[in-house]
Image (cartoon, rainbow, N blue to C red; front, side):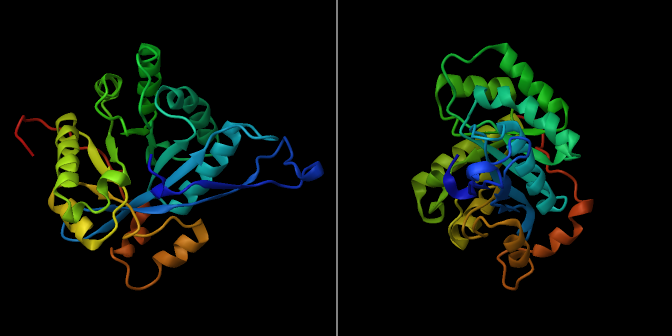
Amino acid sequence: MDGNCGPIAFHNGGGRNGEAEASEPSRLRSLLQPVIDLRGPGYRLAGLTVSLDVSPTSGTSSPARTVRALSEAVEAAAGLDVFVSLDGVAGTAAATILPAILNGAEEKGVPLNRLVVDLGGPFPEPLAGDDILETIESTRGRGVRVSISRAGLSESGLEMLLGTRPDFLRVAASLVSGCGDDFYRQAIVETISGLAWKFGASVLAEGVLTERDARWLAGAGIGFGCGPFFGEPLEPDALLVWLLGPSLPFDSHSIEAASEAEPVRAVLRTTQEEP
């Protein structure tokens, strides 16, 4: 994934010699960034992105830290969808650690149907086998939606696309930023959008820099966007204050009705018409 959607900052607690206690995950402060629904006459807040560092550290297990951070992000989202990327792993490696993370999240009462988990990319060649695809399918059976980013046009990337039929394709900021004035970026984004349309998936465009970018993406039929134009990654408290502030480039009122909002689902295509 592109770095636009922010990392997780870890703060070690009161263990001996400055180390975190092994029995208690480190205190986490997740950085959240607005995801905007570009469909319709106006921009609507649809969810938040969060990037979770799953690399092992001293004093606490990776699943425990990730579950803690995930729980904090979902709580801050107040019923909106949370678009999750797993920093440090991608593709088949991400799929192998998902069950432990989801089990822990479910035990903490995290609503799994609000999660969109990104498998990253690129993917190894060849793929690890049908067991990985079965793991992903069982994950989706629990209500979690799946996205793929940076799959590219490699054989393994397209195989993963065929095998997972993801709910979202995420387009990196390096391909999106400046698209409002760049014919070649527009061509790439439109190609990915057409591919997503065929697979019944939605598109999340990262790195939206300007209103011109946002307007072009909306006009091109891109469903969702995030980036500096809509807001930088912020800690939960700061994000809430920012959302309540004036002059936002989208309707922040939607956060007040988040508890009644339905999870964003991809729209399955029933015809072969071009988008």
